[in-house]
Amino acid sequence: MTHSISPADSFAGRAHLPADKSVAHRAALIAAIADGPSILHNFPSSADPRSTLSCLRQLGVPIETSPDNSVTVHGVGRSGFSAPDAPLDCGNSGTTMRLLSGVLAGQPFCSELIGDASLSSRPMERIARPLRTMGANISLKDGHAPIRIQPCDNLTGIHYKLPVPSAQVKTCVLLAGLWAKGQTILHETIRSRDHTERMLNLTIRSADDGRAIHSDSSCTIPQGTFTLPGDFSAAAFILVAASLAGTAPVHMSGVGLNPSRTGLLDVLRRMGANIQISNRRTSGVEPVGELSVHRNPLHGVTVSGDEIPNVIDEIPIIAVAGAFAKGVTIIRDATELRYKECDRIQATVANLRALGANVEEFEDGLAVTGMVPLHGAKVSSYGDHRIAMAMGVAALGARGTTTIEGAHAAAVSFPEFWDTIAALQA
Ligand code: S3P
Image: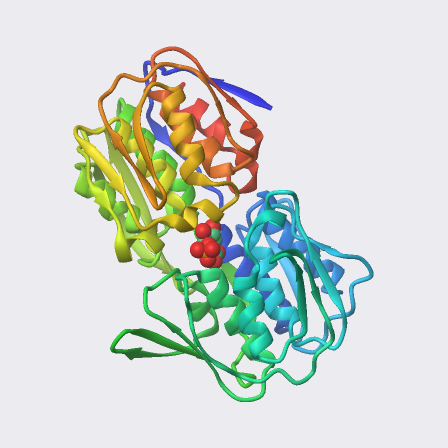
């Protein structure tokens, strides 16, 4: 699908966000290993969390979905999965593949995890290595999916220091620890999103150089009713769009405000954005609130170092904000972006250049000199939801019409994105 966007005379109103997909994957997996049913309200209809649900169904977990977006997961307990009779298709979802591998590493049956072309090109050695150290028998194809996991009933807890700050690798190892003999201690020097630790109420000890998170087979698996927060990473696109093109405030309610996810708020405020937060509260174990954004002139900033994991999914949209900001916006220490659903550094640079922006590419990031007038052009999603949406926002500030090829990729995390933008423009 291609989608065309032109700037409109107005951009204002209230945006409804999809639920947080990081939280949704974890809530579904944890509910599946609980002893009994859990109801997950506001479960997203986006493709990635649906991949997790379909894999769980293949593992024998009864799951019902209702038209009101609630999902009932009938947890089968830690030893209740059944062997899948076909490969588990994780679609485009790296989180499904990496988290589920942690769950399957200590099961008494064989399993195979597969994905689409993008997911099959993403690095999986980063999860296979610690799982093998725990005793799992895992094979990859040249470091990639398909992932084949042999039966294993004797995983052992490990002390593992994360070589790359990655919440997916962290969660994979911590989940495997639920089936292991002894403690698993996961050490992270740079903090990444902490939804898993919150949901499982894991013990966390501060160390001189970071945090040590503990999991073991005695952890209590929560069960019950949980309402998922709105996805801050979806709000990110609207925050930037409203900062650049707003004609009146844009509001979003029930937005997840977990501090390990909201680095973009700091970045945008450093750029001069006018964002207010109100009605802060908690929903289950996650903080949420209402965001209101007014248009304001932006100026360039540098984003690098320990800040990167907290804005890892927001970097393409920060680059877009940079294209409309006074001065230069520099992103460094972000090589991880090259291993996402596409090479997001290359895709962002190529697309912004097609729109007329002045962008320099680095191995670990990019620099964009803002305020160079952009013009409508043909750009590509590269099959990546966040690139599609970032370019949709860039198009709002470009003269003329921009056509985004592969715009349907947005459905991976924000199926209503194009309708939401159109409604705010109306
Ligand atoms: C995620 C972690 C991040 C992020 C991804 C979701 C998660 O990936 O980019 O969109 O839910 O744990 P990495 O762990 O590879 O950094």
